[in-house]
Amino acid sequence: MAGVSGQGRRFDMTTALNTAMEVFWQWGYEGASLAILTAAMEIRPPSLYAAFGSKESLFFTVVDHYNATHGSFLAEAMAEETSGTRLARRVLHEAAAHYASSGHPGGCLVISAAVTVTPGNRHVADRLAGMRNENLAAFEQAFQRDVDSGELPPHADPHRLARFVAATLQGMSQQARDGARVEELQAVAATALTAI
Image (cartoon, rainbow, N blue to C red; front, side, top):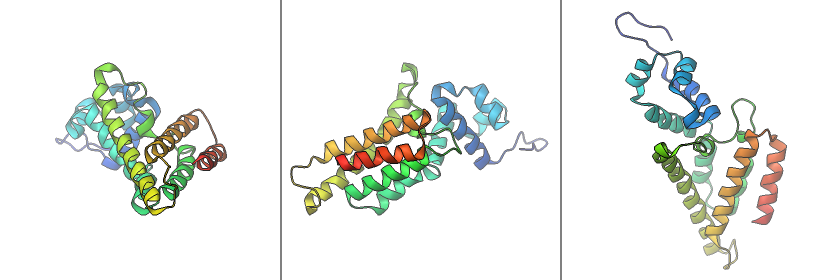
């Protein structure tokens, strides 16, 4: 990240976002201090503010970057699967592989980053919750299509099924952070799908 005389410090945006993503993923929103972020990104605070405006703005830029890279499996599955049961099967099994990958801190950034958000930054946690709730609604709509098409019985409750899948994903994320292996999370996914 070489500087250019008279123009301040320059850096590669993708590299900066990947580095910041790892920091937020590891430390969470609150734990990723400005000092930790700027040291990892090898930039000074003025460069961070000039490029991103604030820590919060950097964080949500990182979340978008995460969703377009490591977390893209979820959006791709939702775009390609119309059946709730097939969507759940695909997402749970792909989450097992992604969450337990050894190449990053583990789990899901969107799930884990808000765990320690303090009341003063509640709006950050609420925004992340909103993203998760959008996914919940998409699962519920997919399960409703299954009920409407007869793939699931009429008494099946799409809302409860969606909540169950979301809770399973959130639990898998935490277990991955605690060291669960891919095959262990695949077993969790298989058990959840049997329950569905």
